[in-house]
Length: 366
Image (cartoon, rainbow, N blue to C red; front, side):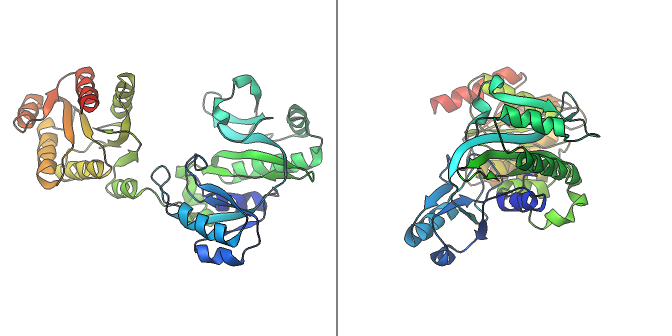
């Protein structure tokens, strides 16, 4: 679970990490009495908000109110801002990158640090970013502080050590998967400031941290509805929606769509259900997400394919607008299921590759 920036910075502050002065706003009119200039940031639990217009520097009260209204009306990767973070404008001498993340291949945390920070850090060549495994029992020692500080050409060893140890304490005590400072700013006054925060807490450990539970980000509306039905739905930006049963089959379907040049608008994992009501709900959610094509990929081991087909046909009857549907359906009662689908004009395939090709080519020609 990725925390909103203001909550992440509260945790930074509690662990001795310097952050810009600022406060949260929900009413744009309140900004008329704020001290200026300010940087306004949309509070959304996703990255890329700067490119989406969710960050703006304002110098007058009129600009502040106008930009606040504009930012609060945005939809950024499926999320409406849950407020604005208004912060002091830093005098930046240079920007760097710093994070601690779980390395799943090593099975331990690693520290990443680079002398270049800001946007699109992931596109930098590997040799720009330093990488240091952290022994979970030893933590951040003096040698690591000196080595990383030297790699960043920092003279502020004591201040940097305080920040690095604070990040480590936060990472361990809050069961984090990631703590990231990007950019880490060295100001012209010599301050080391975390200008942004990204704190991702392991979902399975949230129950151990009631201190952060009251301010969890609000999910995308459709994703939240799917979760209440015990289904996993993720909304994306493309136009082909995938409904499949099982995480592995869902991922394989996404890979095939991508490899054939399709753009994904979302995916929904039915899990092991063949409940027609849930299948109708899955189609309703996917059609509301705005996709043009729904690609159904079902492997019926325990799940009965004809029951799934019944749910698909029920969904077609209940939806006002039905996207183009392509199905790949295999397993128990597959022939009956395909017959049911084809009787309503749905293209039913045995092979995943041909089903994906059908979906991609139909979208390309539409």
